[in-house]
Image 1: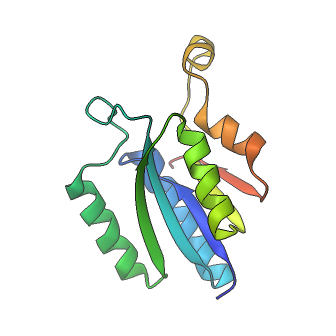
Image 2: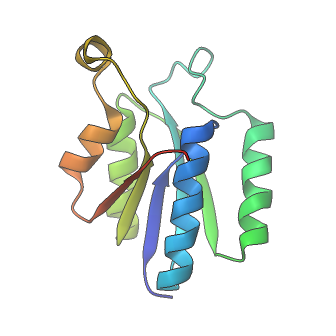
Length: 131
């Protein structure tokens, strides 16, 4: 095994793109993947926090990939910090995040999880978009 790739995942096309690229990178690097699905604690209204059925589909897909994996779901005050904490904990060699287009006002009001991960990571970050 040659390292661990952490992927920030949401149960949508952006998360799917991130997982797809993380698995491809894991194969190239003979690495494992740790998938992080996080919320600020408003899981009942946070549509990016995966439901158990979404997690089961993800786990099945990852099992079929043949790449060693772990899926973690967590709640905390900041989603970016949760991803960065896992990356630090496992000594990640790469973090993969999906990017979504946001308006300038949306960035100002909501901030950008991907931007905070890019700026706070101690390892390389791969930012991807769906095809």
